[in-house]
Image (tube, rainbow, N blue to C red):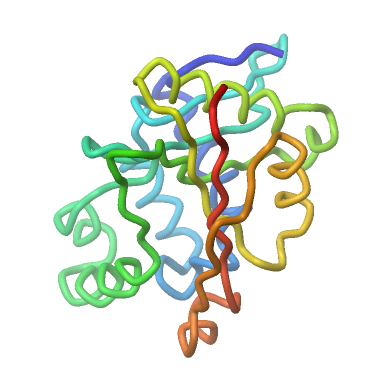
Amino acid sequence: MRIAKGFPDAARPAIAALYWEAFGAKLGRALGPRDRALRFIEGVLSPDHAVCAWDTDGRLLGVAGFKTYDGSLVGGDFADMARVYGRIGATWRLGLLALLSRDTDNVRFLMDGIFVAPEARGRGVGTRLLDAIAEEARSRGYHEVRLDVVEDNTRARALYERKGYRAVARHSTGLLRYVFRFDAATTMVLRLG
């Protein structure tokens, strides 16, 4: 397995599809239907905000994204969204997505999503990606990494806890649970040694 920062343009469709597989249930009402979501995601992916895992044959195994003041793995603006969904569709979608957004801060490096190909799960890909995120945070001078995990994603939370992340806050979605299909998320923090 090879871990590398960034990705070539040719990997955009595979990354978009894997991202949608991981987060489509949560984001489906805001970014769906699937074909439009894939077109949007593929167009706004930022290689500058990604760490990827590849097998020895060059197949994508997983991705960890991060968010900085300069952008995020899946960014984009109104114009990007309007190209895919139209002006009206972009307006209400951006409003919904803003309700999920977690801001960067000056103290903690923000991991903004991690996803592993189904056939690669249980093979250490997530662990290697988390290690790479911690290294990226250290290289940028951070002493902590922050992430949010959906409350019912117990497998991911168990991995984060094994890697030393600790829960620091819980955020309820309230009535938005009917839109995003989850009740709460937990903010977890890793102190870098």
